[in-house]
Image 1 (cartoon, rainbow, N blue to C red):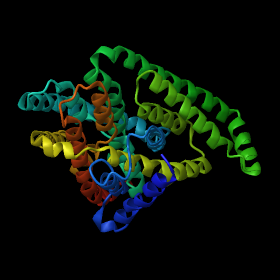
Image 2 (image 1 turned 45 degrees about the vertical axis):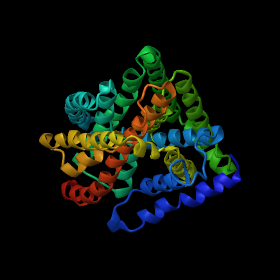
Image 3 (image 1 turned 180 degrees about the vertical axis):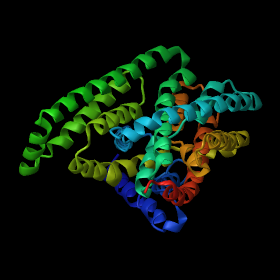
Image 4 (image 1 turned 60 degrees about the vertical axis):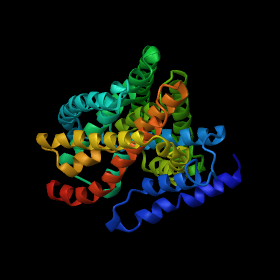
Length: 380
């Protein structure tokens, strides 16, 4: 890892905003960044070594920050979102039931023993993709709140369920780790809320702003990294640590100055680096050596879309259902863990990521249709 690699990543990451600039294309920034990573990584020219430990660490920091920002986008303090939780939960359950049927069928058709893994993948949603997209498009209305609740519930459930699905012998330890991270996040909320009520946070903010100390940012990063360390030690993904801490901060109320600072860190450097690293780590060439895995990836992607489309029967607009189908963190974690444990068939890791890319591509189209729909249902 050197400045040459960082320069390459920083330059090619600009492909994301470049492709996202024409609004009529409705292409999320992440698509361009992933594509750029594919070009310079294992599948393409090999300019970026995604296995470099330093680059991997920076990418993990980016993933934790992305999930933290996604958590802060959940309007936890809104009474409307609390009212939408019941509806979001019912829809998440419906999606899970549909995923069980399709996951078992896919495992039988392709002759694998990974029905549980496929169920988790198909039922999952990506808060890291969907919530920032909702925020950037300015979507409003009851359906948007219900979608937010559904995505948050599905993402958290999938994070907890993934170790059981892919690594059953260590599922107990991972469950304890997830519970520990959740307990620490609740404790952080209690402490932060107490500091807010008693005016200590405001005093710290004033001191930091007057003296240019950036104390809030330093403290938040220290907490995020500490929580991530607990997650890694407990064999839990850093995505849970980031998202849980983001929810805790959102419940208290994120200061605007801190939000701008975190946006600069996440969207200006660490986020693009993570997505380019992810694209660079994809070995899509494995799919050419195992054509049946291409079919598996496409089937997983389509199954995910069909499963999330079932929420239409419960009143969620179809475009929002397609948004909820977007996947990212869970397929990444599944491919990474499965490869390390050597429990996946040759090319299967690439197939899992291909399925995720299918959902992201459809999300790009659905986001364009979601905005006018949301405008029509938004309260006056």
